[in-house]
Length: 171
Image 1 (tube, rainbow, N blue to C red):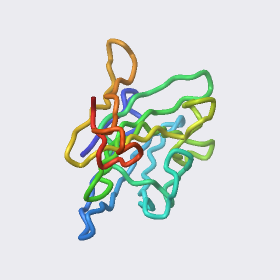
Image 2 (cartoon, rainbow, N blue to C red; image 1 turned 180 degrees about the vertical axis):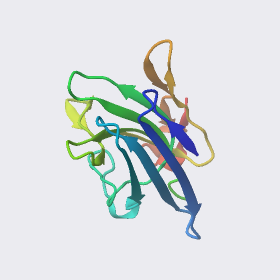
Image 3 (cartoon, rainbow, N blue to C red; image 1 turned 120 degrees about the horizontal axis):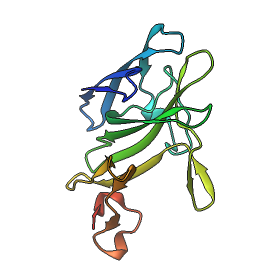
């Protein structure tokens, strides 16, 4: 797929490849127009299998947590503009994941993924991850009218399946 940022500075080309073990390998190119009006292109290298905790990981083009992006939201924040990315990951045979990720560029125009803009139970997170059953669907979308991200609440089908995400679905 191809998504464009609302400010017309970013275009992301994104695709995936299903592997024999049920996992996915992701590919992406970022086309970026910097503050000087120069166009830059970055190729992202998926390293999902080498990352233990996606919610605390900060990535770059050489070390990226691969996923398929389906929406991009521009956030103007004084001198610290960034982009919220909504994404899907077909994690394995049993579960899928949805992400609320952050993309920003440093002073050298290098893209980074994951930024301490989310807080949960008093701790900062670099991105928000949701894991749920492959047999279910989950909505994570940006509501333009409300200017907020809305998403389904996930829970296990029975209390005994707590923290066993192959039994989680939207309730």
